[in-house]
Length: 169
View (tube, helix red, strand yellow):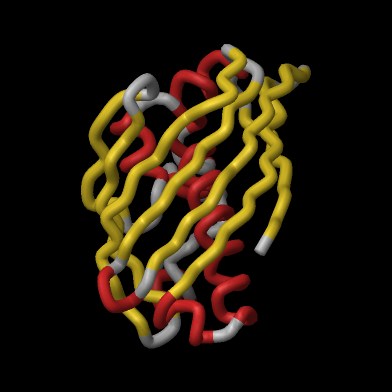
């Protein structure tokens, strides 16, 4: 499965690049991450708990960073084993371009799964992989920019509490 996307982040490419190399930021950004340790030079080890369709698994894996061009681009390559659930592996080519509002981040992701996960079918796997990639980069954007304005308690902003919260307010 392959996917690509671009997003605008309101900080400099240097800040985005540094965040992608920080294990604490990675832990906050990877959906389901329980632990991320290591360094960009030696690679990272991660423990991630995810539910894909009816299969819930704890993946233990490694992430390597390569093709690093400071403040411009890098490649994230990861593999994870989820025991009986199977395995997942993927790569993300990330490019950073400075623009007026901060940084344009674009990425190309390729993901593969095997074992029980592969038996779920490509539609479920493709949807899950896209959701994971989108969530990772959304979390990264929030880590760098802070919460979206409507999350800051502004009374004029639309509420994300759902109809019950709005009805009480």
